Image (cartoon, rainbow over all chains, first blue to last red; front, side, top):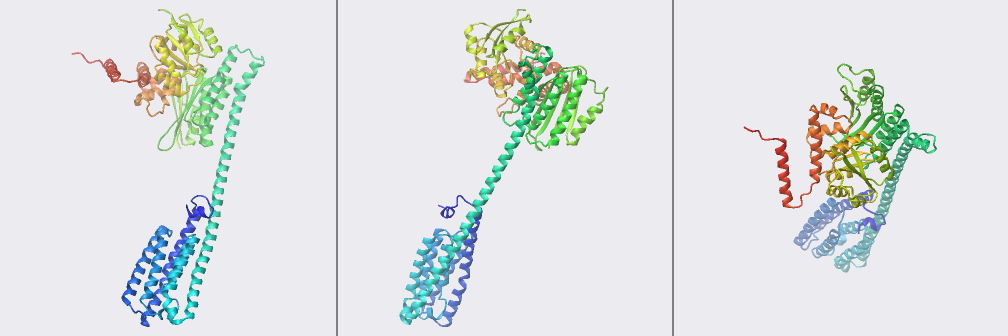
Amino acid sequence: MTTTSRIGVPGTLAVHRRTRQVLTRVAVLLRVIALAPLVLAVLAGIHDRDYTAPWLAAAVYLVFAAWTTIFVLVAWRRGEVTTTLQVTDVAVIGACMLLVAAAVRPEFFVRVSSSDLEAAMTVAAVTIAIGGWPRRAVAACAVLFAAHALAEIPTTIRVGAGNLINTLNDALWLGGGALLAGMIAHGLLAMAGQVDVAAQEAAASQAALARLDERMRHDHERLRHYRTLHDGPLTILTAIATGGLEHNADDVRRQCAINANLLRALIADDSTSSLSDLSIALTEAGRDYAVYGIRILYQFADVPTDLSQNVIDALTGASREALNNIAAHADTDRAWLTVVAEDSAGGPLVTVTITDRGRGFDLSANPPGRGIVHSIQGRLAEIGGTAAIHSHPGEGTRVDLRWQP
Amino acid sequence: MADVTVAAIDDDRMLLGGLQFWLAPVTDLDLVATAPTVAAYLALDVRVDVVLLDLNLRDGSVPAANVTRLLASGAAVLVVSTIPDAEHVLATIEAGAAGYITKDNDLPVLVEAIRHVAEGGVAISPELAFVLSNDHRPGRPQLSPQESIVLRAYASGATLQATARRAGIAYGTARQYLERIKRKYTDAGRPTHTKLDLVERVREDRLELDGLHPPSQP
């Protein structure tokens, strides 16, 4: 079980975790500060010749110093005071207090105002309380106070009720400090949890907004899709259904074939992705050539769905110009409009190819005219793409439009 | 030369009717049987040179399995469909279908494809070339750079002459490339279940190589 779930906040949360870390470091710093009263107490003890067994006292202080170093390093590095650290800490401090009592005269605890390990004792209880362990903090207070009281029994016997009040005073500071620290930590952690929940909710609503945005984009795409269907196949099917058109007439059949290809293009677009804006724009452009009786066969594979509008406009505009040339010069009723995208280092290389099997022309004898240069190559140059025209008399014409991000 | 016998398997009755009407004036092609499913066709127990098989029959049959069953009957299979569903088109070609064309093609294109298949050839339409050139499956047959150029140019609708010119090769060579690519797919679909099969395949491949590069005689 994590501390996080103990105060009712789900999951591992950033601000909450950070707050716990800061609180732990505060506790560790307090621990270092608590060394100062100890040093003063020892100096006072030496000055007053209170140490009856100086070697024992020295050994205890050395053990305590070593443990404090380990405690500070481990807690600082891990960002938390683990159960092992808590238990060992209470045990070491309690034992040290009892052993020091055996190495001094009873007067030692009366002369020094903050007797010896008292500060470390309070900090140990505060540390456990800060970690969000109220029951353990109570238990630690009880153990440490018991050790403290035991250590001061000789002093109490010597001095009497005066020292008893002193000891009770220490107990109040011990319990009060831990309670206060626990309340502050609990309040801070609860607030941090609320901040995290709010952040999660904000992220969730942002995701919902993004989904809504995507949905709107998708609907917009479908609307365009329907418009293309309405202007083409639906119109001709309706005309035939109402009996206004003789469906076996050559021109009607041609229109049917053209519109069947349009439907095929809209259905057969790469099944793994949604219909791309580019394929919709190109079928819209192709639809306009129905009046010239040109049947366009559309083939789309892996068309990127995230092309910018100016790239789509340039590719569509250049394709229109290539189709214009077919309508005007190729003497054919068929054209192929193919879009493929290949993965490459710089991003997808998009190639739009407009091909016919019509008359073709000699490129060397008929250098690209104004239409081709301006409308095809010029448009592609504007978006950083290239256009290549291949043609030969009797073999049709092929226009390759290439663009890469 | 004897007429080419043809059967058509399609569950669209309107299309079968249209096909009968269409092929009636073509003197060297006889449409002798039509059926809505492969099972119904096999039950007719007729032998034909070429079966026109609809890619996606609505009886839920697997397109590649349909091709295998029809090949076992001794007919060559030309797959047709309204929309080139890449996954199934590839599967039927790997199963040994002689070619694939979409149903929107004009009569002369269809007739030429049937004649070609009847002679033991392959019918590679631009739409089949497009499916093959956009095959990104991990286990797909490996094509040489020159084969890829030919395949792509042909897939974009260019005539075979224009395709050959684009690749800088002769017309006949371009045709050979397309046939070789088609064969790579059929070979990829040819199963090697046993060691004996494997030996047989090596032998076939060696014969094929020998055929391509005849050893020079002193």
